[in-house]
Image 1 (cartoon, rainbow, N blue to C red):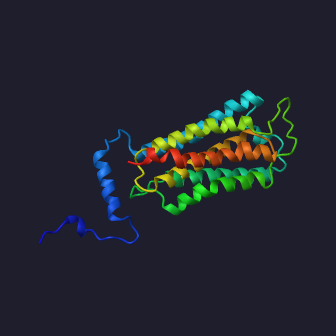
Image 2 (cartoon, rainbow, N blue to C red):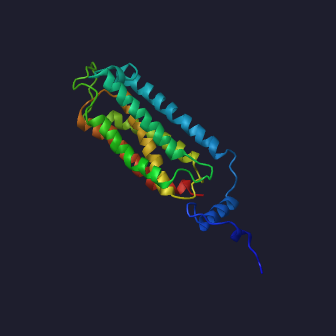
Image 3 (cartoon, rainbow, N blue to C red):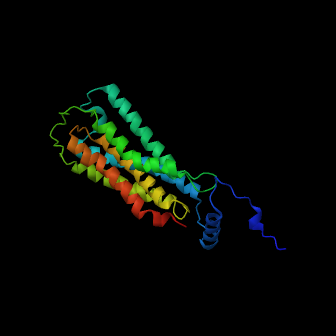
Length: 237
């Protein structure tokens, strides 16, 4: 009687099926080894995201307002409210990034539920924080600078930050997501959107609902969709 080693491994009702392990082994055998480990790429991507956000923020703030982080120092209705919203946005950004980039010991990353929560809730939570009771006054008093009701500058800033951050996230997990790659891509897009939302929050003192919806919230939705549609192909081994 022939005994196969593969049959000796017990199946776990909680773990991935045997077919998935087979695909992972096959892709490992056929994929050339990277010169840089996935863990290193993830660490670099997590460092690149704030670096890109801060760099774009500082440059844009100087070009437009000739001062830094206007969203933190001009026209705030309540300092305590501004501080709480900023704290929650930073937590949302870091938390979604950790979930989206998490690798785990098995190499399969975060489970489906956390990824789905990040992909589905980052945009609504951000919208609730900035739209429900805007932290800035209706007249922020930014001298000689007209703030577009359509958030043109904020959309441009969000696009620049988002493209760099999403590219770094995709490069970090390139050929390293054997399962749920579409959901992982959407989570990466949502985490990217959180970085764009935090950047424009620090940059912009507007309280206009149309401006906030188009210039601050819409890019988060756009990057979530972009991540879920274009990134999975790069993530799969």
